Image: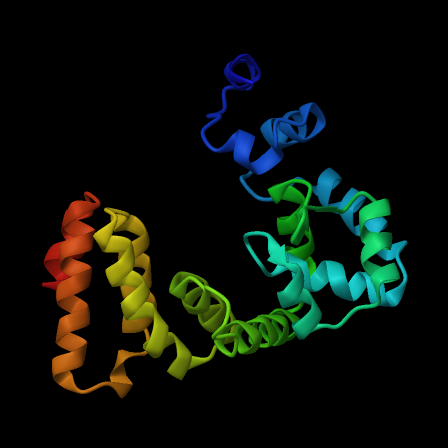
Length: 222
């Protein structure tokens, strides 16, 4: 893979995670003019999607808005698909199944489907996922997942509820860029907060931006 990148004059950082090392996907990504999903891959994925029955397409689209694997309990509560619909997604080569979750074979395929969704469809699917995750106290749900889906669903109150805590948890494990991202998400809607709470968010962003090497943003937030 490194040799292919060298020949193409392109960086290969993150390429394995994106493509799973699949030679076809690697070649298409390196040949693309930008960093998005190559048109050839997008067209292939969407053609496979179009060949599925309507209920199977709904499964694929919902799984596409979940950046990690989609747990079976989440899929069942958010969509309640018939088992045959899930099996069709697996047989069509778009999804793969583990013992307790389903997901895309490669991240690039997920991005192709997610990118094909309209803004309204993406918001609605994220809202559905957020509702299930937030209402599942018996399941261990990472607050960063709640913050992500709240942001993608455009649920401002939920962003303000989850993003600050997600930032603090990320900072605690030295994931400073991730923490800064959560602080930015909260601050985008911080006009609804009291001045003291907004100041706390700005201070948090300042620290995490500084630790991420983003000096100008750190000074601006401070």
